[in-house]
Image (cartoon, rainbow, N blue to C red; front, side, top):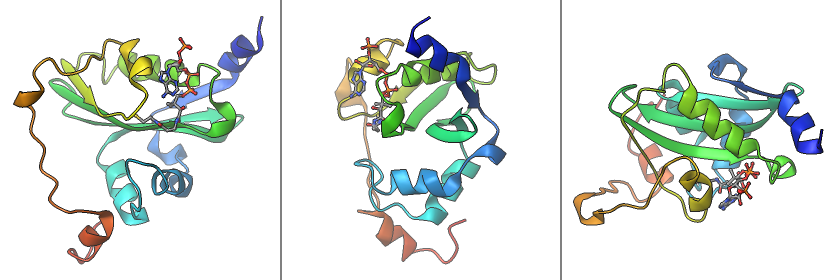
Length: 156
Ligand SMILES: CC(C)(COP(=O)(O)OP(=O)(O)OC[C@H]1O[C@@H](n2cnc3c(N)ncnc32)[C@H](O)[C@@H]1OP(=O)(O)O)[C@@H](O)C(=O)NCCC(=O)NCCS
């Protein structure tokens, strides 16, 4: 048994939101390239309204992923991360397998995601670059998270 296999057996994946370390998730995301400056209230609201997976090693949260979904037609995978110390050991691949095979998610027809540099990871699970990117549109209504904060009284 190699070290990766040993680690495999000690890693726990859970879709129970009560186990999530919300402040740690916020702390990672607000410094990430894709959610830079996100507020704790916005993260709480995203968690409340998404399917979330926590990754744990000896009860410490070491990773996270979130799926925005209707549970049948479409799933948008986002906020995927593994903390630095645990990277390069296959944990994100186990996380992808957990997500795509989860009983509540396994019959979703199509998935999407956005990534700057992790295409190779997602390609292993069937994701491909858009064949017809001209069909997909995007509307960025607020330029950053601070602008949203200033626009609503209570985001949660
Ligand atoms: C991307 C990330 C989740 C990968 O997690 P990980 O547990 O270290 O990855 P794994 O050890 O399971 O390996 C991932 C596999 O995808 C491949 N891969 C492709 N692009 C990659 C990338 N940008 N980063 C990491 N792995 C990548 C690896 O080569 C590896 O394949 P292999 O086993 O055939 O060598 C992790 O590096 C991370 O959290 N990065 C910072 C946050 C981030 O960028 N998240 C993705 C946003 S879309």
